[in-house]
Length: 368
Image 1 (cartoon, one colour):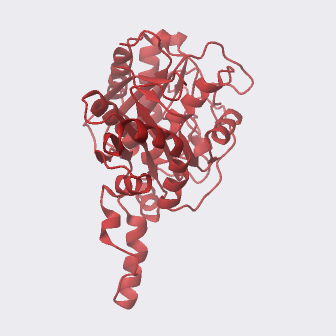
Image 2 (cartoon, rainbow, N blue to C red; image 1 turned 180 degrees about the horizontal axis):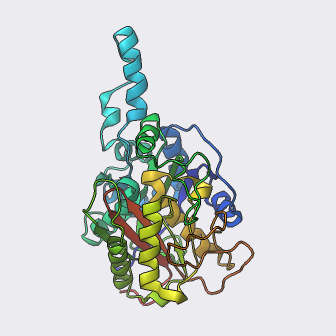
Image 3 (cartoon, rainbow, N blue to C red; image 1 turned 30 degrees about the horizontal axis):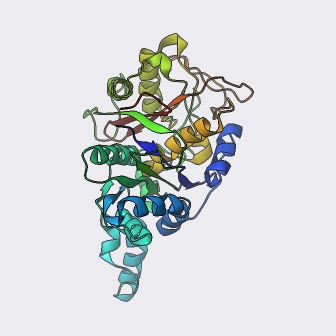
């Protein structure tokens, strides 16, 4: 069964809208800081897909359109200011409710905004959250629980999130520098990205989610397993599900956070599966910031923009060019180069604790 994707609604530190994001990642334009609320991020991104939502509502009914959101932080950005006021005055702000911190809050919010009444859930698999949400949405459409879905992710770099990554000594004081010998950690960013997906190509884009793969390292609470075996397993499952071989992939958007362990295990996994003839690869996180639970959907949107544009230009790998000789060599995208025949793209997303998801998008004519 084919799963077709609408054009996505996106917003992040690189800008709002797919065209702006596409231009930013092609240029390797560095991110800029933002100060957005969760509501603002969701409102902006879902407003861009409202026509697609109305189309599937009219075709299937509001109760047959699911909502699947990925997000990491259960409302600490609401809780901390509210509790500061409580400790000072003895009362919470009038507009504060503990329900804002429910895990289901993003899906509830989207349902109300879009007038949807179908199945709704939130995936919280750390930085893989929205990629996990995409897999779950496809599975439930295939199982008949819904006919279409709004699916994606949203997160902000709240004070609590910054403190947590700071405690892990994983935050770069500047821009992320993935796969460089000079890398020094991640750059956090706010972001949201949402698609509408269904079994019919209602938008005539031809872009499908061809395959997906999930795996779990289960080796450490936060760190990935160093050999890359878990990441490799997710990639192989995605290829098998799509009925593709490694040589069929034309571009890979890497998770590419710029931490030592991520760069080590991801380069090992990609090198093992794709070998010396691997397709061009890049990390776009120096441009967008690491949007945590939104990263999987945001970077899948970048892959879709590459397929839709079809001009052979790929998101540049933004780094200082200083190769780390301890890592397997990767075929990084260069800004000045144009690539031909970009028909399939893979997006890799790896979260805390070894939550690994690989997604493949492209156009296929032999679907059942």
